[in-house]
Image (tube, rainbow, N blue to C red):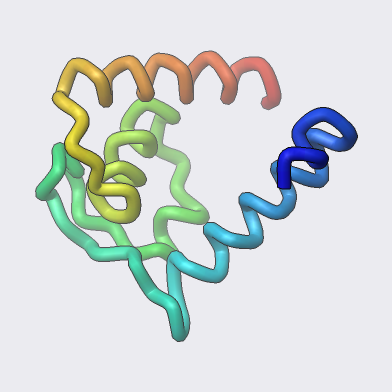
Length: 91
């Protein structure tokens, strides 16, 4: 896996996206519509993928519905800021 980070970052990102796609629904579903873990809004995977909400809000939803780490609200706010930064960079 490490070879992709230095040789082909796009390929690594594509692999990560495929992993998310596979585990966010279907047979290996790990997506839970919840407001726990600072999730803020219950949202299905289908709606999440098509959502027009701000990147910061989607970062909170992703954390609560998929990742569910032990991060604090302040740490998740930093993720939201990073999501906005990268969204603006790549839009």
